[in-house]
Image 1 (cartoon, rainbow, N blue to C red):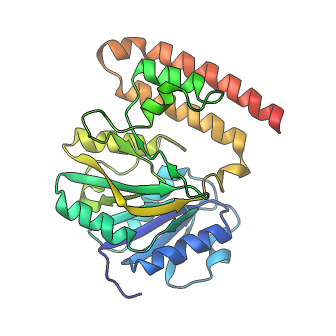
Image 2 (cartoon, helix red, strand yellow; image 1 turned 90 degrees about the horizontal axis):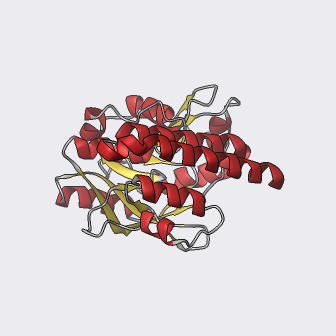
Length: 279
């Protein structure tokens, strides 16, 4: 594979099938240093789909969770200045990786940058988020499943008023390899969800900033793997939110953490009940 970018790509797959093949094809057009696919399935699904000796497939033989699998992929990825961290249900638009690399070159304080994310209908996905406080997190958690356009969810899914970016979606991101390794990669205690938020939080604590590059564009066909185990994903989502709240809260927010966790627990019961009725 001819190398023009300075990035290695790592994709964590879980039964994404042909969507994974499309993701890898779009990554190859960006000419990365190398591509590693970590297969979290139990059936060698990724290797069967790809059948490509230019892509290294790591078979875990069970679902390690996203962050843990991504760390395994990073550990064996070819040496590179930057790391592309990607879901399998992604299509990279032409030039996106080079644009993200240029953003990091132009902003030496930025450790990690996210692109514009479009959904399968071509709508812009709200991929820039603020770190939730107790009030915002609680109201967003309670209102979002039944009132998606509520003001608390809108505030959570907007940049900070001072223009800084707290965190960006982990569906697709470019990170400096040195910074990723400095903070220990993804926290493997998160099985799914919030590991991207936690990574951005720890990078900022290490003195870096987080960036967003609107000129780099990818399409995310959300939920391809998640649909195989929707109840497990609901549970993982809430457990990860609880973990992040407890880990990051200080001062008065720490004192209110039990309340925030209780709110998330109530939301889990309501959403899981709704999920059971739909199935």
